[in-house]
Image (tube, rainbow over all chains, first blue to last red):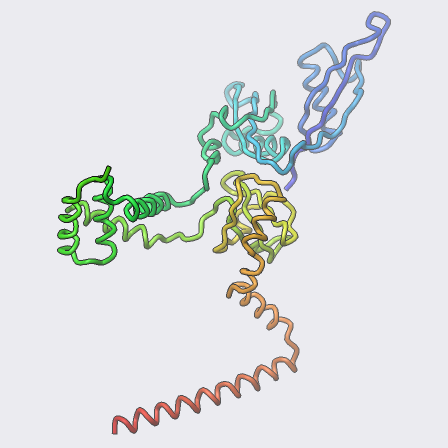
Length: 209
Length: 155
């Protein structure tokens, strides 16, 4: 699967007599290769500053490698895109290992959800978001501090297991355990009458200190 | 008392859970296809709905993202905190002796048997045929003895 690559492109106006030391401008460009990266640099820079390819030069264009490609990160991407009836800003979140992976996901996602083609999308900002600052529920659902479990039922099993342990050690202390104890007794396959009788006994037991 | 009955039903349905192997941190998975086919890895983190961050320090799989479609969950889970470093995954894997347990499991043995069958020569097949014949003869002999004894008892 082809992913975009992150490039750092630095450019400036050509020095002239009026402007002997023009300021440098740096951009983070996500492109499939360095040729497209340079082209996109000029596209953006001429929108934002009075600078164009003919009157400027690219000082540096280099690939940016991911700092931690083996760590799962949450990316917040601010973008601007043209829809059929207007242009809009968006904030989207993605979970990925690399920044360029997340941006690639964004382009695919925009194409799928909004039919936005790559030429109509401008990535304004990409930032790694800490888990507590994530806004989208689809991303937050993967922020689980305990084990991920596919089935909800597992939670119920654990609650019963916990109750069983409690019953074995602290049966006399809490009346709450009575209902749970009853459930466990019936589940062991004892006769209903037996459990009624046993429950009667348990009710009479005084709670310990 | 109604509490008991409802509890019993709930408990029954929970015990007969359809899913027994869950995607969780530390779950050991078997890679079904791809460049690392046939190896075991541990799920270290979940990236999103389709991918997991997976690491197999003791089975020669570098830490990487892997789609769930490639993975088949096994019964083994190692105790590892989420996004643990490879060093700790290795430690937990060796402590749980996953490689040894895997070798002894019937899943691994079936894979081994399939491999052996695929690389059999004609001579091997001949040997298998002879061994099977010998075994079936012994079984039939014993069976006939039991049947005879049973029919004699009846009569």
